[in-house]
Image (cartoon, rainbow, N blue to C red):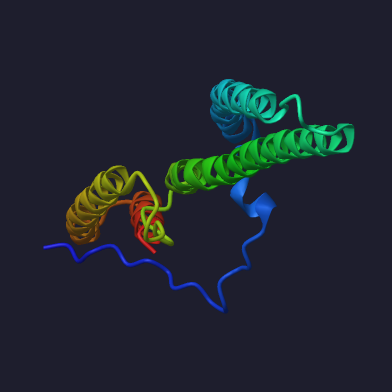
Length: 204
């Protein structure tokens, strides 16, 4: 029975996280994140405008109610200035809130897409490794990465290939032994031995 594929332990401390480390597939990640940011910006702007218009209308009504016939020009100017300042403060708060929301969602989008693109990037590297004739996994997906079930199936596939390769090597060794007993030409035995060595190397 075959033993589980062993991952090569990573040496040294883990690499520091930087923004460029999260952008493994820049086109896809920025495209997805940009779509989320644009939709959020449009919706937040519409809602913010509705909130501002409603607040501005209430401020105007309160200002009209406060502007009685007995109000002095100085008091009227003060009321108008305060109303305008309140509107400006609300507008700045809405703009600031939208900006914080957009930046937060943008960064979140990059991190979330990284958890999909990162494993895909890792598995493409593993595919190339296997295609080069190495039937052994190196490294694993990180905790929290997506595509864990896909990686598990890939790991099972590699282990199955390794088990089949071991069976074929065993059969090949038997053929080599019989060839030697039958005094087969040395070139034939050498070719069989070379094939066995190559197959064993693929398992290392």
